[in-house]
Amino acid sequence: MKAYLWLILSAAVMSAQQAPALIVANEPAGPALPPFRPLVVPARIGVMGKSSLSLAEVIGRVLDNDRDLAVSRIERQEAIFNVSGAQGYYDPRVGLNAHRLKSVTPVSSLIGGAANGKITQKELYADPQLSGVSPWLGGSYRLDFASARQSTDSTFVTLNPQFPTSVNLNLTQPLWRGLRYDDNRHRLQVARKNVQLTDQQFRQRVIEITTQAIQAYWELDFAYRNAGVQIEAVRLAEQQDQSNRRQVTQGLLARIDVVAAQTQVATFQQNVYTALENLTRAENALKALMAPNRNDAIWSTELIPTTEVDTHASKPVLSDAVAMAVKQRPEIAQSSISIDINRLDLRLIREQARPQIDAVATLTTQGLAGRPIPPGPNPFTGSTTAIINSLNTLLAQSGLPAVPPINTGSGTVPPIFVGGYGQSLDNLRSGGFSTASIGVQMSIPLRNRTAHAASAVSAAEGKRLQYLREQIEMAIEADVRNSLQALASAEARLDSAMLASQTADEQYESERRQFQAGTSSVFLVLQRQTDLIAARSREVRAKADVGRAAADVDRATAQTIEKQHIELGAASEIK
Image (cartoon, rainbow, N blue to C red; front, side, top):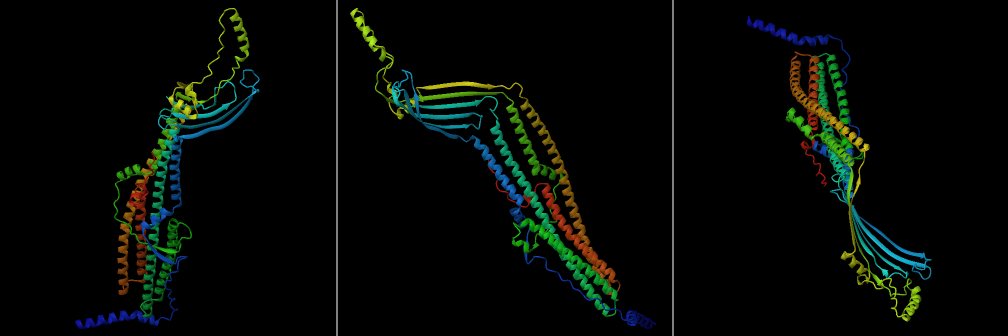
């Protein structure tokens, strides 16, 4: 009985296996199978070589060749030069006043000192000067040393030529307005603040361009890996197509199953071409950041990213991230510097509203020397000599004493004045001929509405800058929160995408085995194949999103420079 049942079951199985072949054999011959069209990956436009590229190399080349960053470097240099220019106001200034003079003056008076009606004077004069402003208390100084050689044909002079010299020192010291702060010190302080401002602007640009480069790199990584996924999809579809063709030839499948597989192959091929286009776009976007010009060899090179996304990087706690961002974000520093500059403006305006009270001191020392000339007839007493002689004769006849000669002054020169230019300098150094004065100059505005109005405007500007700072802080708070949420979501999507890719692969392999066992259909295999490729594409997209989100967190917390080990160079030492 058992043997009989076994024979019946065996016959039934054989009948079931031969039935499709019999059915197919009885069908009329259909159209030929569509030709197999394998994937031909076209060469990308203008790409001839390959080059591996790490994230660090990308950042280095982008920072070296970014035009905006080069402009920021120039602006930093200009700010430093402006500080030197402001400091130059306190540089001493040297001057010289020199001339050579010849003067002929007509004289019509009998006592003019000229026998021929004119006096000729000659002078060689030099007056070097040193002046400047003090950088501490706002005072100013002026020192000059004048010396000359003078000659004349006047009959009244006793030294000819003569060498007058003098040293003059003038000091002006503010006692109220300008004592602790003035326009020059304000200009210097603002220039120093501008250096700090350009440093923060430069730092902000470095963070922005580095973040842009990192995100472009991960876009290229996604495009490169996605192209590989799409090419693998075509390979899987082609394998299924070849398998279907063999089974159709064996009479196990219908022709429509080959058409379905061929449709899948064509669809995946379209995805490959789209992925290659996206790869080229992502690659060119990164090349535009890296290349110094359009003739660089990198434009003809295929870039192959080698850096892996760190999917296990630790995320900062929200409170720590916000505190870090508020402390280190360049926007906050720029806002603080703007507020500091406004305070300097307000201080200057209030200083200018004060009364002007200055102490003024002057010290002058003189020297003189020359060559004495022999005394000649006295023009004042020469006309009275005959009168005096006649008078003395009459007085002598009368027994009276004679009138003494009229003395209009000694014709001798003090010995200290006898000599040349060196003797004049000796007299100058001795300080025997000096003049000193000290006084106060005052200028008190009665109302000074201009200064008060400017002070009010500056105070209002300070409030506006403070409100802007609060807005910046709130924007940073939102930025940090959004970036942390984006990173957390990207990591969660990556975990889900990796699981989905793994399970889709298992489903595809299971469906393929069932199809080979005859318990599934071509439609389900192709569907599982499509799901697998979509899952793999989402996985590589999620990895790139994690890299982009991590870069955005570093930007939001101002950690990009430290995380990427970027050296900005030593800060400018300005004192």
